[in-house]
Image 1 (tube, helix red, strand yellow):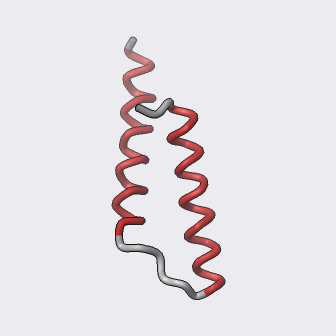
Image 2: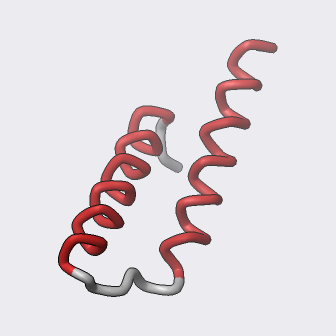
Length: 53
């Protein structure tokens, strides 16, 4: 399992990859949006749960 900081770092890397692909006109892999959404959801859940615990 990843920590909150690791998840946030992976999201930054994915965003950077998307930007670099945009300028290089490369296509991002099909899994990219799914992975980004899952990581965002995991971060949101962890932040909400952290407040309640």
